[in-house]
Image (cartoon, rainbow, N blue to C red; front, side):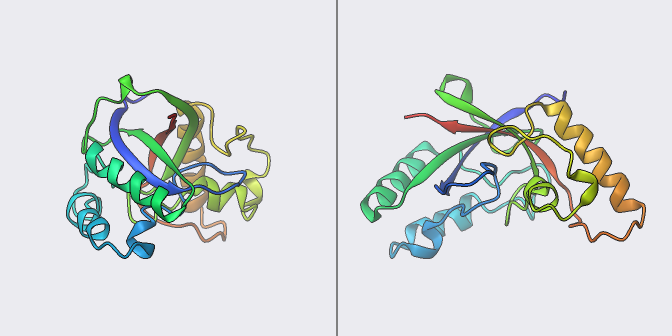
Length: 181
């Protein structure tokens, strides 16, 4: 297993779903808050993965996360705070001191839409070769090794010209944790 680094937090609107990974309504205040601070901070401090190869679009600034939580509560938005660990170096926090629940491992983009291969290739049911893959109760892989094996098989299928349309890109493996308050 690759050494994973605690990168930071992602704010996600809470929804009931068989999938609890990285692909969701992330940084939702950018679209629904009347306070421009949230989108401005996001654009300047979080949205960096497209231009920096060793970066994940998450937040290492706990004061910003606290403001995000306060605004979400004020607006009556159900949310969850995700902590992610990846092979990317930036940003970096000491996440070991936090009380978290491990959700599992996802395979997704390091930012932008956080497009998840698990959600779009397995859970959607569109790739028949993936129908027998067993995911945990959160719709994720239980181990890093399972995520690596899936990535290898997906790449082989994508490169085979078998006829499926696969999202292309540099996907990474996320260890997904939910912060418990």
